[in-house]
Length: 95
Image (cartoon, rainbow, N blue to C red):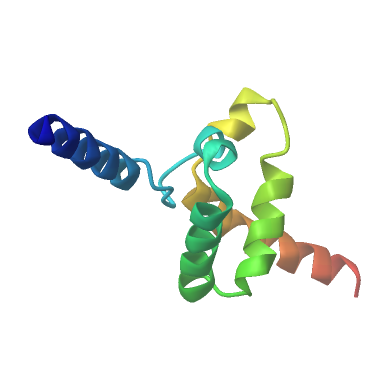
């Protein structure tokens, strides 16, 4: 009995590690992720790309707020490289 319980606990721990959100995931994974996982990814983006993690959290929530398959299938890291370019171009138009 102890062996079965330990096996179940091990599998639960292993599955939670494997299911953690990463920048290589897409919108479907983003929508299914916990808020803590989303924040962890946004903090990683903040360190590598710049901007505050709350900026990324808001941007990705807004970006993936759709049922469009093309958008949902885009990887987080690809979006994070394009969003700063969009910010720059919109800032230049306001000049």
